[in-house]
Image (cartoon, rainbow, N blue to C red):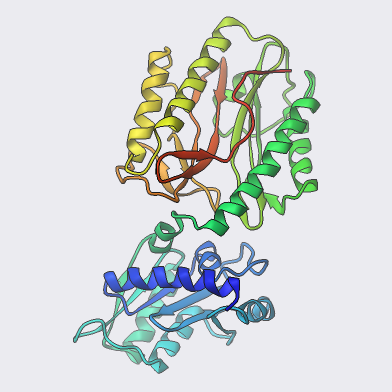
Length: 379
């Protein structure tokens, strides 16, 4: 059996186990990242929502169109997935497929069919209409984030890919601190940073890079513009590479010349928040507890209420995945969760700074993938 088949079969088995626990006989996935993860196909899918994957206990069938059919069939030769490219809508395809499949009822009354993220309202209406005619005893069950929750626990192959993406990002940071100079525009730094990552192994960017100087840094999602970097400022750089189908994410704040006392104090507090959280992360800790610790450290340093966003998020095929480190997440972290730790301090009209690593929850702690220094970097 091929390595690809082993990976995809393990993932399908996890989904089928979840379906059985929720009494679902069949399941329709439409989110492209979910389908990418389940099939373990590489170099096949892009951003188009052009695919549907129907899963039962013993059958995994991918519906696609002529643009992707050849690549899907080539990838499926070493996997348990079958490919169908009939020119019908995904909803009608699913109804026809189930009507001819040997699907056994979940209970004595009905077959339960789960539909997850990515289903449009129009497709839902078609499914209801189609099933009313073809499968009157089938019950449609709307689910949410079923596969995303499975994706939150990374396997060994995913960890290798995440490390590869971060290695490119770390090298890019080393490069950019030797490149950046006062008088450059934020946009010029962004272009250099992104071009470097692409020229040094990145398939693409994980997201559009942030370069924010001075007061612009107080906007956590600032768009790089024509503002010039000036002596005395700090500059926030938030960036990541996509490699082997997986993302990286890091933020570093650098200083243009010797920083004054209030910037030094803010950075010391920020670093303390980052490092205390990374030291406490382990299985059993909740996302809310991690966020609360960061907030407490920031408040003790005089920056209470100056973060304003969640402390972190999952990273994988997508740049934002489960789980999150935020007040709304009271679920415990598990071994294999990959999360960012990115406390920030934002003083409107003055400055902003953020320090972000990402890594994996291990059996007894948190292993950071990011290798770039936490020491103050002064240009």
